Length: 277
Image (cartoon, rainbow, N blue to C red; front, top):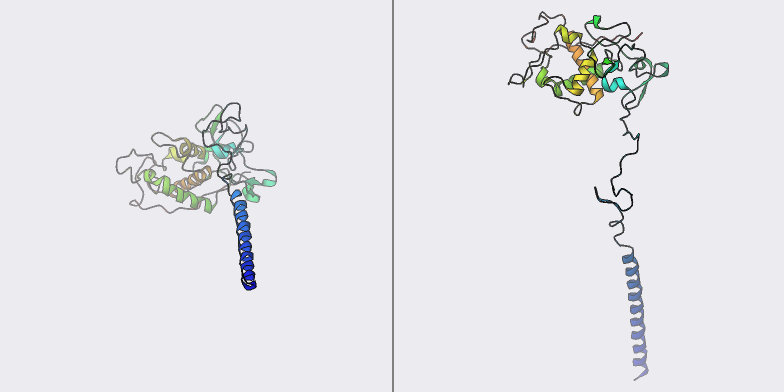
């Protein structure tokens, strides 16, 4: 073998050695990467719903809530806002109020509202005789020692009434009609007719009565507690009061169930509000 061939052979062997080392390094890198791609994140210790647990003494993986746990936004610290009920014989300044210091209050989301919004507004009930000096009217009794309140938990505003009109048309008008005479579309097709809002009896009902009816149902009317949150229930009641005020001077008698003006929808006035003294 000549010296040229020897040098050429050595060069080829050197190149092969480099390739082998590079392949070995790549193989080692692939092994290292593969070792980090295990299924630990996928197969991590966890419990599928209702699977038995060997960790807890009772063998139950789905743990009960700690005592006193309340979901965010569901702290029912204002009984009147959530029920429309007040303690029988209580005055308007001590029961069911949403007020804090300096007339401040909180809405359902917990936002602080001050000034005029810090005092509870009086109900826009056309029958003022149903309100007593403390702002609470005697209504139908709920639980022992409770009665329907007759004030809104916060001042009635145009935005509130507008919201109530929207919710009323969605959830209530199919039975009660757009103007509250009980001539809704499904009533015209055979469903039991509800009473007109424009009778003396329902005009005199406190606002807590309407809140209770929406929450728990009344007669053939089912509960709408799942569909309508409390804040929207109060808005609907404010709009019902507006409907009643709009028809108070109409020529129809208190026992009439027919719309005034050939079935035309009544124009909605701004509800009367009176601040708590």
